[in-house]
Length: 89
Ligand SMILES: [Zn+2]
Ligand SMILES: [Zn+2]
Ligand SMILES: [Zn+2]
Image (tube, rainbow, N blue to C red; front, side, top):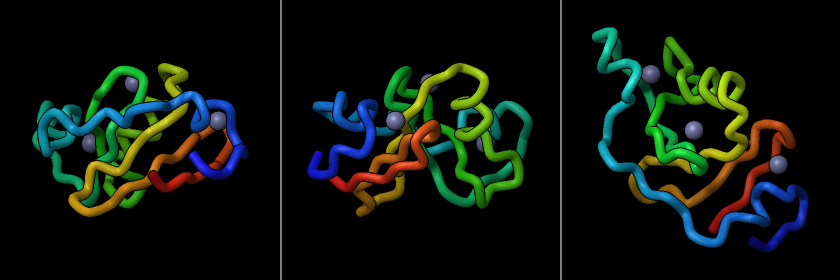
């Protein structure tokens, strides 16, 4: 990581990719999503804040897992919720 804004982003040495290209929680409730994010603590792939259910944000706040990566093809960035920090990789 280039910017040392956040200890969580600094601690990530390899980025977890999305296991499946779908939101695990939206699939359970038959909903849809806009973009996908992958939790870098547990590897869950969940939907972004533009999606109706914002599962990635809810997961971060409920679990305390701080960092997500974009799971969109061609996007290479990480985001830390507690620090509101972004890093590209
Ligand atoms: Zn952080
Ligand atoms: Zn979702
Ligand atoms: Zn997680």
